[in-house]
Amino acid sequence: MTMDEIGEAAAAGAVAVLPVGATEQHGAHLPTGTDTLLADHVAEAAAERTGDVVLPAFAYGCSLGHTDRWPGTLSLHPATMTAAVVEVGRWTHASGFCKLVIVNGHATNGPPCQSAILQLRHELPDLRPRFVSIFDLTPAIAERYTEDAPDFHANEAETSMLLHLAESQVRPDRAVDEPDRTVDRVLSYPMPAVTASGVVGTPSTASAERGAELVEQLTEALADLLRRARAEHDPDL
Image 1 (cartoon, helix red, strand yellow):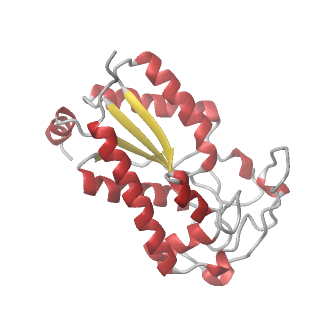
Image 2 (spheres, rainbow, N blue to C red):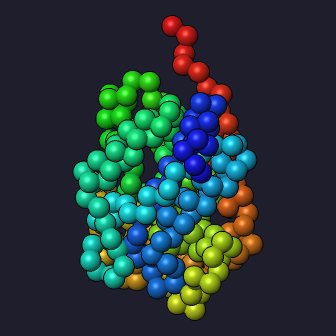
């Protein structure tokens, strides 16, 4: 988009949509950009239905829990990610947008992104932000994502969607199934303490057909949220 097109969209009330993902290991069968690819695709597909504006995807996330056990993870410190999202939010607001929806594809991006929203709400009182993760857009989506593992990673759902969206980037013959060893535990554990392969779930059961169905669910759920966000006005006092 040109600067004029961006300004016109903002003036017309478009929602700015910021996809945030990660660059991290996703087992031996999925690409390290899985979370970014999914968040970006869903954001773009939903915005096509609503006429909103998608910002360039944030490809680095807070992935410290993966440690350096496996190659391919590039993690930001939580404070670094918070600061970066705040900066993007400030400049998005400076371009005329008053509504910002952060669309997340990686679980542990939540705390830094929510911290960024707290700071942006304080600095920019007329900005209306929202953080949402694609894997819990609706209760039905959350249930679908976690069929094989409550604390999933590179599981059937993610693998199925990648088979649908980017089949050439998936290595099905290298998929390893591992159970979710965090179930019923009280404490939090880094990934190397709960999985030998970097996978939590059963990616061997994935299919492109199931992936296409889930991608459509995600897209329409996010489009519905964007439609409601665009139409929403501040409460009457």
